[in-house]
Length: 128
Image 1 (spheres, helix red, strand yellow):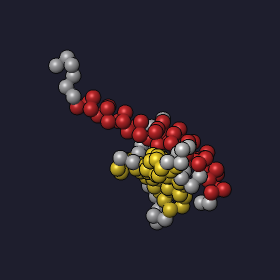
Image 2: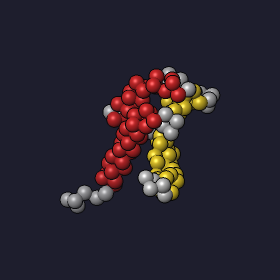
Image 3: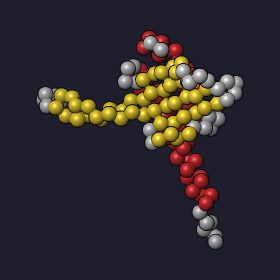
């Protein structure tokens, strides 16, 4: 997907975010910075969302080299044959950073709630 086409995916990212917040899309944590959602119906598909943190060297206002931490996001959509149909990287298109950040935080927040709910279910009650 070329950079000028990235804006076409914005409504889909918003929809995925809304479905995630309403817990209609449940994500699997592949690693601390990657989440995967997959479906078999109506056809086999997979969506991967990643947070990518890089430290880069840049010059500050006094022309000194400093380390700057930059966070970017990547969303990829795969078809049944594992071919990536869509790949959007916020490091390549700054307009995508905020929507992808909001999506990642929604996924991460839901997973944290699930973890706390699980913890609550396995701990003995205070009345015991």
